Length: 258
Image (tube, rainbow, N blue to C red):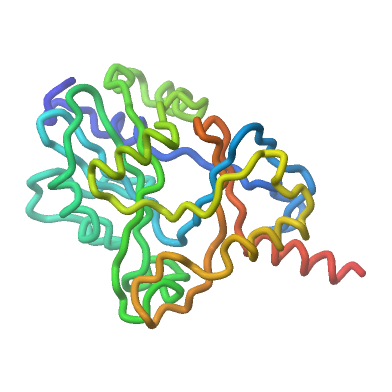
């Protein structure tokens, strides 16, 4: 593992970016925000978790205690920085956590968290707080081999986009969260893949049944409307998201055609 001063920060940033997650029903390219009937297929057990509407953030931890903080696209802070980018409240929310969590003995460990609430972190901030309270929840952890940092940036991006990052399983993720004392995004249920709805209307009802109000409100003034649900296989080989907004939009479009 190279010393922090010798790290290629562009390579580190690219190798640790969180990958895009597909929607459970495929997005309809002909209708902005709408969905088609094609679904993501799951087999075996599927874990349902709340999808929190905030900003995607990273804590990148290195052997010896060094760490970096960033959004999905950009690194904002390194351990010991006296001045940092205040954008989105990520450093404010995550620096205390980054200072106390365990460093990996080898390689790079990345904690992926949703930072939410606060002062307009997202358009949905008021659904989680009425007092501009800032919160965070862990939703994934990955182990990154430092050897990939030596590749050209284009190759790193290709490796990442083809699933090269090693994400921990549901059991491993839960154990890490417990060991480090980090709150996770809420677990709603565990179902068989065959129990998941396949129709648009059925999935809309499924969302309302499993998550009618957010479980991560930060104070009594929160509006409470949730964003949706993330579905993931136990080994995280398949992961997809189902957002109220997409299903509402699709059903509205269908109603107009009648």
